[in-house]
Image (cartoon, rainbow, N blue to C red; front, side):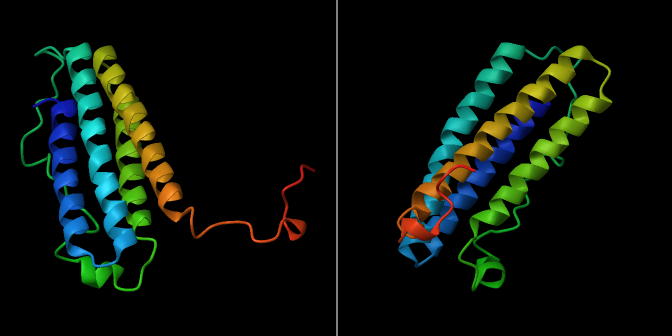
Length: 161
């Protein structure tokens, strides 16, 4: 299994986790947030599959990762949801941390490898993860928009300095 296939496997597990979280929460806003994030994982998986097809990692550059390495261990899952997020309205922050860790992993891997094709694979995967992180942030902003508004423009910093 190459690194992109490993990432795809982990993303599918992340999507399943988000769907489970969406089903478990009672708050309608959190339910909507997790459902939207699970839907975005479909797009993310499709883009990873496209990267995998375009780069066509050959056998001599395949990192040959074992299935035991490609395990998704979320900070937040339906089994520990009550403990981790009991009074946490910003549950998505845990998801952001997971995404940032994945980006750092791919960046470090790209720096350490000597093979050009593997460097390209890692950089493409890191860029894909950055786009996914941006989508997560945009979804959160969309869900939070009704709560975050400017009540009185006179006392704000809307004008440029």
